[in-house]
Length: 211
Image (tube, rainbow, N blue to C red; front, side):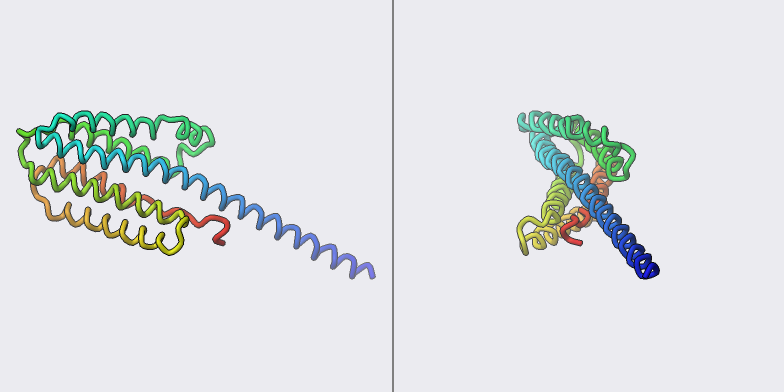
């Protein structure tokens, strides 16, 4: 009888341990999903800053005065994304040295440099045709990246897969453009770095409800 009670007690403890482990894994999954989701929203703000800046750069090439204003708005949005209370809170929670956070700051730094290069463009710039194509690559990559991140949130059923697939297609288009353009080598190098950072943004992890 004592042996049966002992066996039942061991089985009960094993069951409790398994439940504790399962709860821990669910907590970790929720935490990782929440962190990545917040970072993806910040990435989408950076992407929109890139989209606006590419449009502003094209306006500069055409001599349109609104180009400078659009580039200023791009810089302001980028600053808000990287210096706002949401980013400060993520750092406070101990995420500063995580790979995704480091990638985000690196992308923001390169975006800042690219916007500064765009400010210097004008109707007198050389290689305007190449620069316009490079700006299109930036806009295509930023749009595609945001479509992928939005589709991965799984909020709209089957259309999510369409979003992700089209976003991947746009990233491919941006990468192909970079291979085809030979002019404006310094500008191209900076654009190339930004585009490949956008391509390298990791996927959103599965939420705990998907396990």
